[in-house]
Image (tube, rainbow, N blue to C red; front, side, top):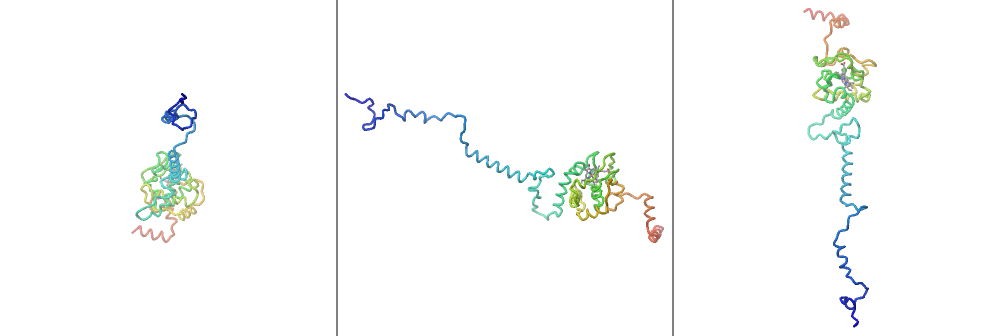
Length: 262
Ligand code: HEC
């Protein structure tokens, strides 16, 4: 009787000496999930792709709306360009006003406020001011070029008479060019309800040359003597009137007197 130990082995299979069924033994290992362990595990491709998309979107967003990282930039427009106007004729002053707005917000707004309403005890209003809306910019150019100091009336009613509150020269502050000054003046004359004409760089230049070089600020009285066609004005005192009449050529004075005595 030479019976083999494991008779269930099929006849003719090689005897490799194993005494257990391998599949049976590994059943548990195949069924159970491996224990989680610390260390490097491959990241889900979805997460990698998701992060890549987010980074790309963030980059595009910054490029479009960063306002070129300039302090004075107010990123209302994409890439610093005005939004396309879809209907109606384009505003020919739009580019000039935009340039003026940037300089205004960077320099003048500190005292006159971004909405041109002025600040109590600091600076008077530019919105609805007869100084700003005057027929031409002779006074405005001089104010920004050399400054303004002295009691001032706006619209003949609002009085701004703060001791020590003077406006220093701002020409260099806004960039020191006639084009920049034209842009700022165009902006303040056409914003916040103001409806005066825009100002060109050539006009600024002509007024600047006429104003000449000076170091002290203008006084409102001095500026009011400049004819601007509308805007703040002052009646001549009788002394000033006398001076004016004296300066007239004799024949004009004669005809004026005749006119008046009719
Ligand atoms: C440091 C403060 C200050 C800054 C900056 C300043 N202003 Fe003025 N501004 C004043 C004050 C104060 C007065 C009134 C002066 C007076 O009482 O004589 C004035 C008066 C004026 C007036 C005449 C009065 C009126 O309200 O209409 C105009 C126009 C004006 N400023 C425009 C400008 C512009 C444009 C800028 C920028 C380029 C500017 N100002 C920057 C303080 C300032």
